[in-house]
Amino acid sequence: MINYYVKNPSRKLTIFDRNSVYIATKKIGKNNPKAEHNAIRQEWNKIVDVALVAGISDKKIKSIKKNKITTKIQQSMKIEGWNPELFYHII
Image (cartoon, rainbow, N blue to C red; front, side, top):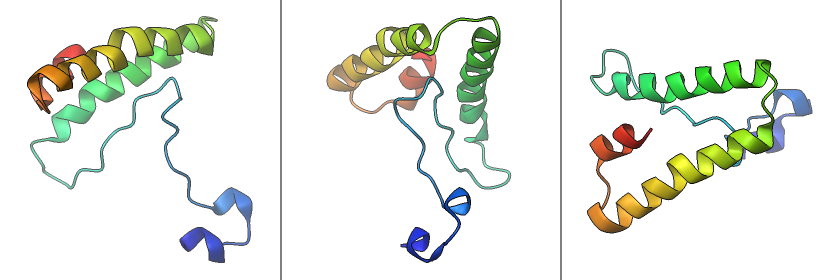
């Protein structure tokens, strides 16, 4: 609803694109012990930045993300349920 009142399109809020090469970080408050979980996500995102600069295509990175991360996480969730430790181990 906020975007309805914002006139300038560049100032509108956006939702993270799940089809992006990056993995979204979670909003975590200050001094939260779960903040270390974002470090793993940020490490992937830094590796993606390096790969993009090196000339690896978005398509190739998305394929790796899908095959090595997304698919494995989905399989893990079907077998084990939501287990953050397994999630971060896969990443």
